[in-house]
Length: 358
Image 1 (cartoon, helix red, strand yellow):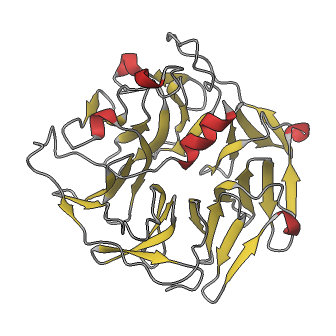
Image 2 (cartoon, helix red, strand yellow):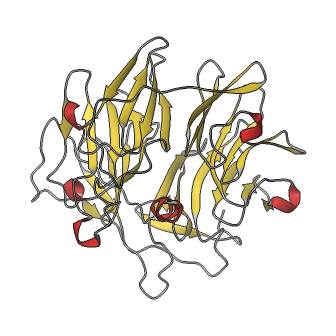
């Protein structure tokens, strides 16, 4: 199971979006961008799986095996286990109201105060040592999703946050139902939690509401949840049968659903959406929606048309799939992927190596 989960975390992730008040014809395909620009230099990391900008405008990059990278506008610096991190795989980054950085790793949780790391494990109350998602809500409440459920920091201690189980039929080979893959908050203060096998759960502070395939989701494996400026909730799902022991039967619907408060809308007519998996959904300040659809590409939707970012240089073969999108304070769009770090420059993808261009 652990190997399968790591493979899913590192799977190529691409962006697909489809909207416009209904189904869009497959003949109306998004424009494609030119090939990416690949400067000489060493990648930030083979896998950049999270990107975060703190209140000072410093960029932080979570990587697989290379620890935590920081770019402060002048230089790039790496933090690893030698500096006090509990693990060199950092998958999630958040900042609380006090300026502490909270880091989810594959060997517990850590916070960084600018000088030292303080680490937390299951001995401190975490539900599992492999942390998958860290989130700070509007009340400065720390939520920690892991491969064993959800924990919250309360009065200096981590406490389990039990999630009720929806009434669904599970397959015998589905063993990741306690894996928390997404935590977010909507404008009303509701907390949304994505679960691998149990769909999505909304918590309003008192009651839980489940969203599963029975409620219109394409899959019960929810890996991304994002509210847009209209108050709609977007769900990114992975292929439902990916854990099937028979490799020939690892098929099934994934993709993107949008919930308007009353009904789910699916977007099956954009190439690849109905049979692929979506791992990341992001809205930038201009209201563009970005969605990652495995095996297809990264799509940006501006409210009128789609732009597809999926041109990779076969000779270099660096970019295997997008895992994270971030718009920084300057309005630049950064992309973390299974090939390093990229930034959108105009209508092309620019690779950012350790040597830049920053």
